[in-house]
Length: 88
Image 1 (cartoon, rainbow, N blue to C red):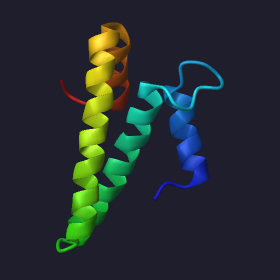
Image 2 (image 1 turned 60 degrees about the horizontal axis):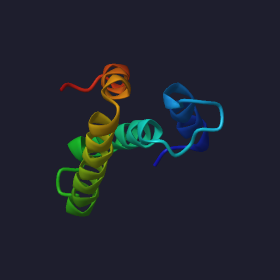
Image 3 (image 1 turned 180 degrees about the horizontal axis):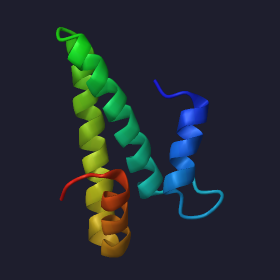
Image 4 (image 1 turned 120 degrees about the vertical axis):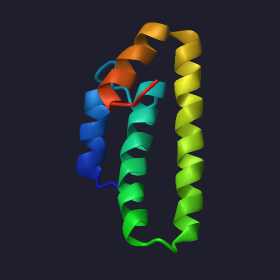
């Protein structure tokens, strides 16, 4: 689970403007951070299948946000992929 301080930092790095909290970029960045945290948890707890299911849901949700962004604004999509360190 992300702390408020970490989440605020993620939002600040991905935001388009000052009050941005719900754009596709911000949501994808928050999901990426949650996915990274949950992945490290699952490496230690191999039999935690309930968390694994949550991880798969988060990955699908992030994929949907990225697909939307790629379809509507290719430039912002490419910038976000580079910023988050995701591969195409």
